[in-house]
Length: 301
Image (cartoon, rainbow, N blue to C red; front, top):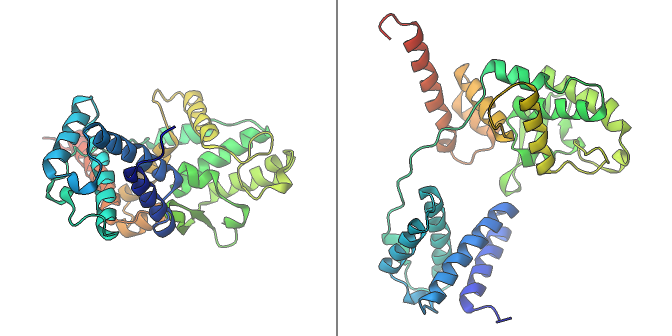
């Protein structure tokens, strides 16, 4: 096996810096690694061995080849993000005088609106796990939590028992970049959690040795794959003819809050968004809701 090239070493250096200094998530680093390697391999194929051999024209060629390979524009844009991170890191480390990607415009992307469920669909989904087995109690509590606080699936799977503040009515979740936030929970979610923890979870083997709230039938921490299965099985049982993912409940949480008049900054805090611009997509969804009501009820709609 050939030893890593200097370019690959520099990519590894960037990933280590992002992990140590920015607290980047493992999934983010994995994605950056794959796309960074694709760029480094492309440079090797063209005989480029140093960062200062790159120019804007070469980067345009790289992006054009990604498009020719059939990659979506959003994926091409993400590759450019990784390339820019990589090149800016070389500038900071003194291995490159200037960033050749600075002259490039980012691809213009069509705004993709989040997928959400309506109120009746949410009710049917949450009511789907109606049995009394420990896994039924867990599934009901898990779904209630996702919709009640807008947690990401990784945050819900990683939720610890000591993150539940029952008297205060809030949960403490750890999100991207290892950042912790506090989000309120409603009565229905607390009832489902109480029943799961006191009855269902307590009946599972090895439950006492785990600090996680949600466990598998064998007492191991609930995995992301298992979480997806819970949501999809509930959607199927509820008769929802859509490929529902856990993130749909997060989007529905935010959309329903904003439709009811919630403050955008408060929703941003509850979702754990670093930028208000990320949360603003839900205001667009709300305006679509208002327009649909106008078309439905106005005499000249």
